[in-house]
Image 1 (cartoon, helix red, strand yellow):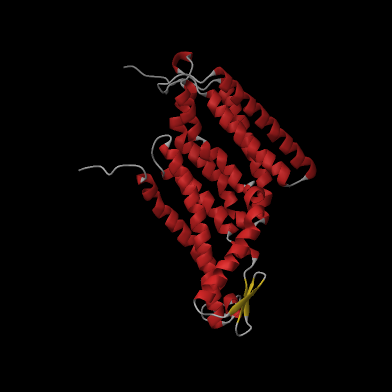
Image 2 (cartoon, helix red, strand yellow):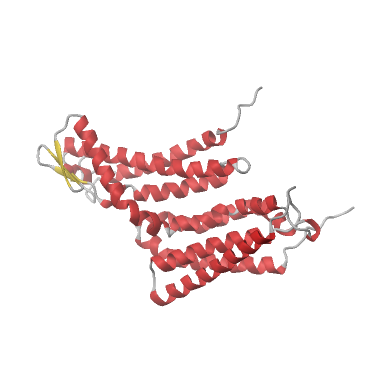
Amino acid sequence: MSSSIRPKLDSTTLIMGWLIIGMAALTTWDQWAIWSTKDDYGFGYLVPFFSAYVLYDRWDTLRPYFTGERTHVSAPSAKWFLKAVTLVGFISFLTFIGGGATRAIFGTGALPTLAIAFGLVGTILSFVFLSVKGPENSQPASHARWAALGLVLFPAGVWIISGPFLYLVDNQIKGQLLTNVVEIVSGILRVSGETIQTSGNTIVFANNDSVGIADACSGIRSLSACVFVGAFLGAIFVEGTFPGILIRRVLMIFLSGFAAIVLNIIRNTYLAFYALNNGSKALDKDFWGIEHGGTGVSGLGTVHDFAGNASMFLAFVILIACVPLVNRLGRSTPIN
């Protein structure tokens, strides 16, 4: 009887692995301030668990790259490129350290969050790329390094969605999104024959009743949440080989953003028509006219809240339905 013993991870890989776990813990601590104060980023609490799950799910595929048990047939990476990746990793780690020190001294803010998150991502990707080994201590194939890197793109990159997204995207486009929503909804009302006026983000009806489209209705909450869900679905369920799988995963993220924006417009249009027919105050009551907190109020919540929850649920259903369609992209139908 013969038994095979799998090669162990070397000490450098183990030390760097534990170091990255510690960095992820500090990143969680930093971004917790965003998750706990910004309703739009409640999904952030799931990020550490989803990231860990994806890494756990892929560990049996990723580990052999670190021990030389798995490789690909291609030329090794150029020495100058490996030096460049090493430099990127070193700079990323220093960026993380600087962001962590700034966070500890001055508290929360855009600069430390961006530095910590991007430092973590750069460190993880550089570490994985450089830690790939070839069989019997030979130079690993370049394709093997890139394949290993692809396995950790989601566990690493998702930290950018849960924190820096607020400063890089949210604050930059929320106002424009809100303006666009107001213009589109008011345009739909006019096309349907209604006489309205707009004053800022408020739509005034012919009967002088009005409905305001608040910042929360800009769609940024559904956009950030859908991008996160789309990235997760792409990481877990989208299939294929490089570069097709990368294209499909990026497409899933774009579809997520598109679905969030379209459904938010539909939600706000529905609420505008509901307010037009039932009065703007009806939005803060349930469908039977009972106010929030009143006796016998529906478990569905107010009309406004129900529309928001329904649009989010529908967005997730649409994204799940898109997965098999995205997986078929670029593939010929098998002939039976």
